[in-house]
Length: 492
Image 1 (cartoon, rainbow, N blue to C red):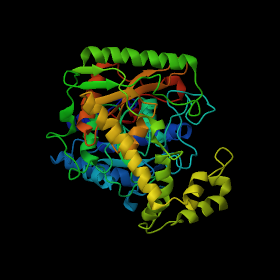
Image 2 (tube, rainbow, N blue to C red; image 1 turned 180 degrees about the vertical axis):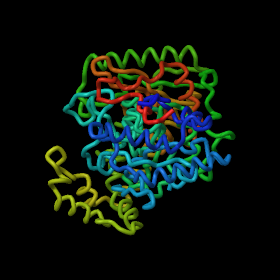
Image 3 (cartoon, one colour; image 1 turned 30 degrees about the vertical axis):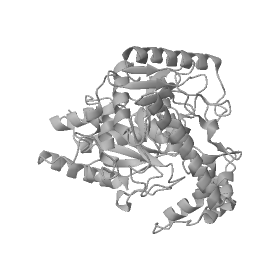
Image 4 (tube, helix red, strand yellow; image 1 turned 90 degrees about the vertical axis):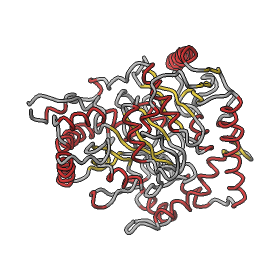
């Protein structure tokens, strides 16, 4: 076999851009490398649900290679392959169906969309199959258990971790970027709602849905944010989001949450005493480091949590998702030229008619869809739920804590109701990879919340975090059979 140039498991987009610039590799060769990785290992990991036609991809890659040779670079991501979550519509010219606006920006930037990443059906609104963990090979009996990749865009996270692409695009309504990002040890951010186009995004709730990047480095995340964020909706720093990367805590004012109170309940995953102890110790060690390095540090700020989102005996976010799902779903389908279903009723009926495939024994229900179809929630109910969400998330939540304690950011365990607060407020949240469980190797981490349109602040925090804590590990070799140096496909 010819000699390898890079390791697909660890290669970052910024490194690949350097290889492309020096002529060591072409975009066409990158396409071949990542398609080979997908073909070799996706049967096990199930991270990719569709691949663009090889001939079409190579033709597009050769066009980008020619542009490069002529001195034209569309962006810092010119000629780099990417995967996108399958609830994001792609143009028919790409040769992939969507089973669920910002993608036009990716194409304009010269990014090569090589395939669609798998997800839980309707972004976990109807839970079904999802990708497997790259770091863990075992089964678990809870839907968010310690061996579960977590969240609806598990394919987007698993694919990056497994070396199927250097980065990807996922989406989040509540927790669907942060949880799988944490469990794959990748960097991600859910932006402020509305600054990334929701056009072409199959919704759970347009009040809470956003696409976001999943990468192996903060630099790649910053460069991808430059592409997908609409500058007319927010302020992108001069020099792009990467200009916010200071790699230091010296100018960051930090408040942190109590891990004993900010965690998932047993219904999400079966507790493991050793894992809980290890994570809590790691969180406290991280807090000690931050206290010694940050401009200011406040321990255990009293941020409201998910329990405070209850209104009239119901979670106000669930109320909003139930009340608006039919409207948002049918607004999306009304813009489709061809579809087997156009209404929520047609979708429910389709699932019943094809129950052997759509309602299998491990996922036999579509109760959330049926509830959204038959809900008697009124406009007044929904207005009250939204007002409560914004009050708890913003005026009595994130904004209040940041102001009262003179903070830039709030940090706590990623696997907690921090993601509820991001959804309730519509504000950004970012992942902070931290460690790996001793008993099964699964990554875990923390998360950071900031006020609306403070993505640059969160990227500053992520860069400081990346400079402070150990680098991410690649998945263990014995987890799935693979040739790590996949680029042996590239001839010298």
